[in-house]
Image (cartoon, rainbow, N blue to C red; front, side, top):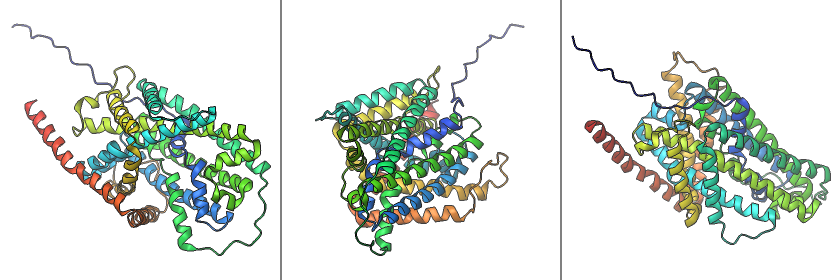
Length: 450
């Protein structure tokens, strides 16, 4: 009997490694939410509120609404603690085409546009901190994206370490703003009593507040790299959102203490104006540095999270196949990361990200709603799931339904106020359908040839 040739089996493809604890994941939640919004948006909210008390209540209500959304994502992450987050839940609950359209929006406008936009904001504020007016921030924004891409190339530990440092620094900047604002604020008391509450105007003030609270879902995209994710992911979401809400309410209290409600409404840059009033120009430069650090952290986590979504899409055959690979040593989605960064750099250089972000608002909120709607599917279809989640949304189904009603209001308001941008957003979403057909046809052809 002749000997059979011995063939060596191919080494297993590298997968994601669970290296992040509760602290790391919590810093990702905080870093994904706190960008530049809290340093600028309170002025817009003050314009639509009648008093400082209304201002604080608006930010507290926004925090509660965002926490409800995060609780739904916490159960979803505990049920399916895999890389890809919302894309994975939508694929399993509603099918691949719905998941692809969700990922398509993230790739073309949402995450890529946010990376380009916020990296540009970073350059502008970093220049302000140095006392330098940067005439053309686009090349510097590209350099920022390339630098952060290089960090994340070396895996989740490298990206997480940088994220932890940046998030702690941004929290220190907020703590400084809050402490000096509350300690040294000298805004005069209002001469006349505040006007009565205007419900419709107050509800309108919640819109920018809710936008400032967005971003908690980034941590679900990297759930495949969190240790004991069924317990640690919900803990990180709850802890992170409570920390964000506390910081946001206290920061608004500090603005009101220094500038007063009328001064806050009239300010174009409330954080800089508050610090300038207390410490002069050095104070304004110091808070500009804090804002720059905050935005840099946001760009970092956006790159890390989005790249993992696109890597999972590539694994499903609805994105470039070569983007499905992970680095053999660092276990990072290096190819998907490079492709995402390249597209974000194009948007930064051309300046088209601003309009794209306006177009993406409706699609973004509808995507969040669709992801939370998968929770009802999981509860109904997976009641006897062997991998039962360690966390369940309290007061189910009331809290998820309430959040979906809020999203419906946000979408309706956006469509009413900006029908052109909303229509363009819908058009971009619909373009994803023939793109999906192309990818699935290409996948079937490739599988047949294989």
